[in-house]
Image (cartoon, rainbow, N blue to C red; front, side, top):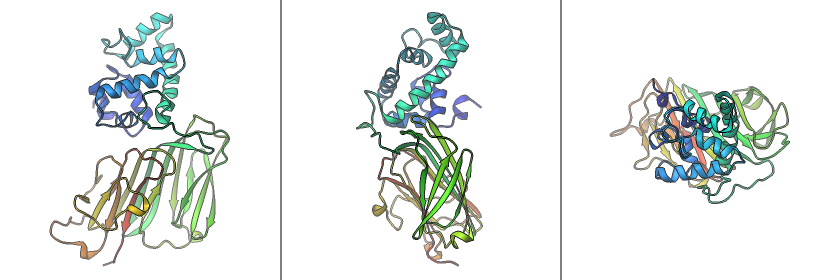
Length: 344
């Protein structure tokens, strides 16, 4: 299996490490770096624009990191003809009288600084129209993944993973609100305290140490049924509204046993703009695996027996509805809505 096939484009750091390898930052290789393309302006942008923005982001770093990374990515004069990363490191190391291992260590630290610049848009040619405000308790969500399991139309659990970069120092906790009764079970470096507010829940996730500005954190937890939180009803919506800049959001629902007759998707809509029924061009094919490509998407599933008709998808014993990703700005919503109208 070649390097491009192994690459996971859902993570910006992975993309930056991937693009450093082989022949470096080239038009052929950036095709396999989806998240990096997003932060540089999107897949529809000409390669020259993507390259110029990437160079601009590198040049916004403090010396000597620009020269180091331009050499590593094969973008500096005299390095573009070197097809291997080690060759570029050897040449750059010779200019500063350092060994390859030392150059590699410095690259890793510089790439972390570059990732911050790309996420925030703090460089001259950034495609972000305005500098992201540095608000108190603000974050930039690098990636969000929500995966829900439904067995015979009953919710079993939801797994959530938020990778975010802090734009603050010393925040107490990160709060995630939910209207669905369930008990969160955190993993890793976070503990949780749940506060009930009316019919909703605020899950406050506390890190085991003070969070620092510019650092990246991974918040993972499972939400499971719990009698103390109330009895879950039929799921009518699985949604996430992002009030901070979100790079990628992937929302997935796996059905076991009874599966929907129809599923549909829509993009880039606020809560009040979302349609309640499928329109032309929005129906998805409910087969095993992902139902749509990576983009800003909301998906809806319909269990109603009346939804069968000409061209209606055939039921399967197991299917996955995926509403994957794209760049979301504050106020936009990526959600996965499961509409249960009637039961058979």
